[in-house]
Amino acid sequence: MLNKVVIVGGGTAGWMTASYLKAAFGDRINVTLVESGHVGAVGVGEATFSDIRHFFEFLGLKEKDWMPACNATYKLAVRFENWREKGHYFYHPFEQMRSVNGFPLTDWWLQQGPTDRFDKDCFVMPSVIDAGLSPRRLDGTLIDQPFDEGADEMQGLTMSEHQGKTQFPYAYQFEAALLAKYLTKYSVERGVKHIVDDVQQVNLDDRGWISGVTTAEHGDISGDLYIDCTGFRALLINKALDEPFISYADTLPNDSAVALQVPMDMEKRGIMPCTTATAQDAGWIWTIPLMGRVGTGYVYAKDYLSPEDAERTLREFVGPAAADVNANHIKMRIGRSRNSWVNNCVAVGLSSGFVEPLESTGIFFIHHAIEQIAKNFPNEDWNPNQRVLYNRSIAHVMDGIREFLVLHYVAAKRQDTQYWRDTKTRAIPDSLAERLEMWKTQVPDSESIFPYYHGLPAYSYMCVLLGMGGIEMKPSPALALSDPAAAEREFAAIRDKTRRLTETLPKAYEYFAQHH
Ligand code: FAD
Image (cartoon, rainbow, N blue to C red; front, side, top):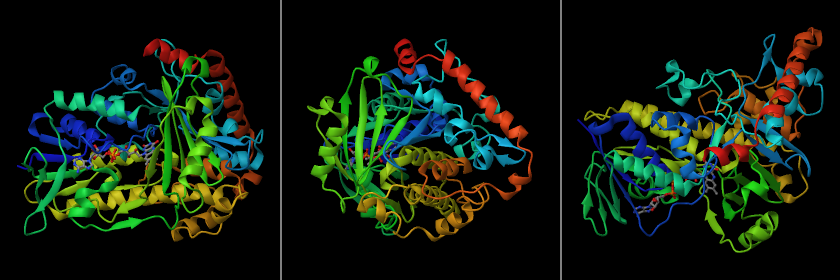
């Protein structure tokens, strides 16, 4: 029986993998995690997808167990500011799209929306976020949504199996370093062997499989399966095994970031329950409100902006609170390993691949990868089909997200700098070009978006197309002949529900001040 796993790297990927494997297999699996005491984790990655709740559920953790330890907050949407033009914003919320007579409500909105704000007309959450509210009441109960929290029949499903069944209304934002610390304790308490040391060499046998890693002070460490969580360095998968890296730079040119962790009095500032992406002259700035500080950073393309100018712009954007904070400059490797599982090595996290964090997908990639590892855990046969299927599923998720991110830039109306003008002439994936033609006359649906599981449903595409404003969208012709009464009733129901929630929900800060 294969049951010895060696994880190299102790960032978010390493510790999420270690804790998940222990939760999945308990004492039947033997996990060693070795992380460098000198090379730090990337130090960012603090906003997530709403599916992340399944990770914590799988570990048997409740919000009250881990959220206070990680200064965590709720994220109900991504808020896009200035992508259409300066002063404009819209939300991409975690909220299932309503459908009326077989047409998504956004399609009816195009035919005859009540106002010019598709997000507030078609969803409840945008107004809740604008008001800085919590999706839970002070007694902990959750707003009513069409999902079943913790329903038995949903337990044990992977994210891809969940998709379409439920849409949980929020994701989490947390301090990455604190989460790694929390998961370290969780894993070590469950028997993970933790070694702090530098891996200096990866040893291969004559078949080209990994036979062990040599560390500076702990000698050789060997196992059956090696998990490369060494971040952008990709020490095992790309350096030792020489697996090629497929760059996405031709379609996603942002290759750099500068980040600041800014302490703030969140009681005074208030907590917007969302991650904000504010477009800039050569990229965009993320703002992630946590309990006690704000995480922020400028994602940009070095061809258009120097690191010094990026840092200056970011500091100006944050204001005096950033004065004494050190900046973390990061070079991003955008793309994916051709295969993430090669021989007896699986890459998880940044070593496997990464796209810029515009829709907070890095931790989602990790979560998806470890679900698939647990599901396809090999035995001594090392059935190659498992690797083929695993690699296919990882490639689909990343290629699908790449398409979705490229769409943001193609659809953004903004064209006021060379950076933004070039987003309209740069090559895009052929498959996306075909879809864009289709979407000009037929709003995106599950048949016309990227056809494999990649974590995003059709309504997400619709939000981006309607919010970014650079591509003219038309309603389905059939709606001109259809009775709009039912859609009007739905718009009215959303208005009522929005009013009810904004009058009764507590402020997000108030909720966390009580529960943390
Ligand atoms: P790292 O954090 O880089 O960890 C690498 C580990 O490998 C470290 O522990 C290091 O010590 C170890 N290591 C390296 N070399 C050796 C060696 N020789 N021997 C032993 N150990 C070694 N994702 C999201 O989901 N949401 C976001 O909002 C988001 N924002 C991001 C913003 C930016 C600018 C970037 C670059 C990424 C962002 N991500 C985001 C992605 C997210 O940060 C990563 O997916 C996540 O942190 C996982 O990183 P990692 O563990 O793969 O790598």
